[in-house]
Length: 478
Ligand code: SAH
Image (cartoon, rainbow, N blue to C red; front, side, top):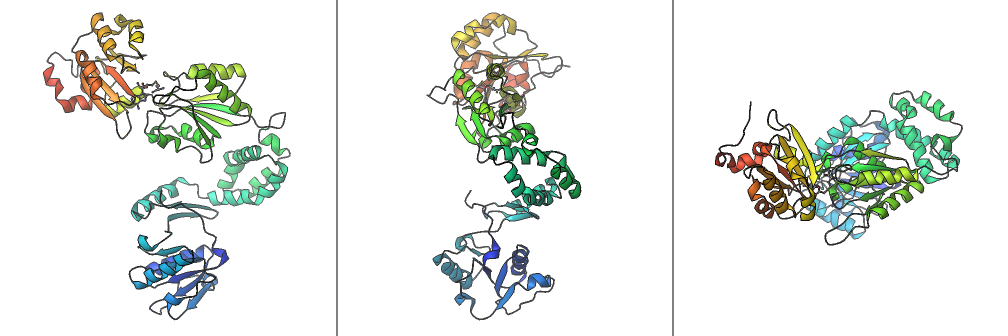
C-alpha cells in the first residue's frame, strides 16, 4: 500500500483547480458533489458550466490570470490538468507549503490520487490501485456497487442521528458497539434497508433498556466468547463466509504458525493479534496456556477468535480447547475450515475417492518415526483406501517401511504436497518405494502425503509421464 485512503473535508477552504477539457470538468463535478468550493482557472478561458446544478455552480470562483502564480494562502488542495509546465510548477509550489496536490495522470508530481468511488450518501467506498490501473479499480468498484444494499447510506445516517442519544444511554464502549451491531444486523437495520425508515425510528425509540438490548450480562458487563475458526490451508479466498465474519467481529485473534499473514490481514483492523503457535526453532506457549488465554479473553468480555490452519478439528487440538472452554463455562462455537488434505486434493486434482477404485479415505498423523512405529499399518493396505498423512515429512522413511512391510505395493502411487493453495506450493509424485526421495525434493514448508492409486489421476502425475512406467496401475477403472 503506497497511498493511504483518507477522507478530506472539503468544507474548510477552496480547492484550486487548473485546466480545462472534459477530464477537468469531471473533477469539477466531483469536487462540487463533495461540497467543495472551487477556485477554477480554465486555461483556455472557457468556464463552461452547463449541466451543473446552479446551487453547486455558485460555489465556483472563476479565476483569471496566471494560474501558476495563484494565491494558495487559503487553499486546501491543488488539482491540475497534466502534461505541461503548469502541473510541474504548481506541484512544486503546493509541496513547498505542504498542500496536497494532484497532477492528473502524473504520479511523479502528485501527492494524492483519486480513488474510484462508490457513493451512497454517508457511505462512501474508495478503491485505489496505487495509480497503477484505473480499469482494475473500476472493476472492483462495480463489484462493490453490486454487493452493497442500495440504502446502506440511509442506514449510516439513521445511526448518525441516534448516536448521541445512545452514547448517553450506554457509556461503555464495547456494549455500545454490540448495541449498534444488533441494530444493524437485526430487524431495525432491515427496516431501514427496506425503505421503512419510520418503522425503524419507532422500533429504536421503543427500546426501553438499551443495555439489555445490547446483551449486557446481569453485572452490566458484556459477555465474551470464543470462536474456533478454521483458516484453511493458506489461500485467503478459501476462508468461509462465516470465518470472515468472525474475523471481522474479533477483538482479539489468537493464531497458529500455520496461518498465513494474508489471512490475518482479513481480521478487523484494530483487533489484537496474538501468536500462540510453535514457530521455526521456537516452542509454542503450550496448550494449557492457550486454553487459559482463551478463557481469560472471553471472561473479560472480548470476542476472541482462535484461528487455526486448515480445520480446527483435524489434527488441530480443537477438541481439547473446546473441552476447556466448556469446563470454564465460556460460550464458544466452531467454524470449520478446509483441511490441508482437501486443499491439496483440489489444487493437484487428486480425487480422494474414485468410483470402484478408492472407496475409503484415512487421515492419520505420524510426526516422528516413533509415531509411525505405533501405527497399525496392516489396517492401511486396502487397495481401495486412500491414505493421507499429516505431519509426515520427517517420518517418511518409517511410513514407507510400515506400509511395505504390511504388504502395500512398492509401486503404489504417492504424492508429497507442500504449502498447498499458496503461491509457492510444490508437489512431487512417484511411487511408495521412492517416498523418502520425493520428500527430499520438497524444500520445507508444511506438507502432506497422499498415498493410493488416486494419486495417478493427479495433475502432477499426468505432467510427469509416470503412468507409462507403471503398466499394472489401475487407471480409470469402469
Ligand atoms: N488443522 C490442520 C492440520 C494441522 S497439523 C488442517 O486441518 O489442515 C499440521 C500439518 O498439516 C502439517 O504438518 C502438514 O502436514 C499439514 N498442512 C497444513 N497446512 C498445509 C499446507 N498449506 N500444505 C500442506 N500441508 C499442510
